[in-house]
Image (cartoon, rainbow, N blue to C red; front, side, top):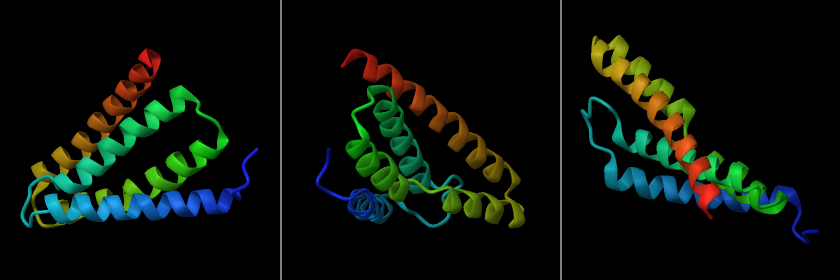
Length: 121
């Protein structure tokens, strides 16, 4: 049993995830990218980690800290959605579709990869 309250585990993990997301964005975000690579990166990496974590079943505390907190703050559905709609309304239909499919397919593949990797550990 943990001595740290669940809300603190989620909050601390969320702070870590937000800082990591900011770091990724500061290094990868480029104006005019057809597919926003910073958002794609955080979604794919977060999906890989969450897939691994879910399959590894490390316990409630780590699941709250890493899964709910860190991955929750690191990944972003809202930015992905906004960036997709923004491209669509700007007439960049192919970029919007590529962004939507890229995030969906690569994130699902990352979950499966993480799940598979957990089986080897």
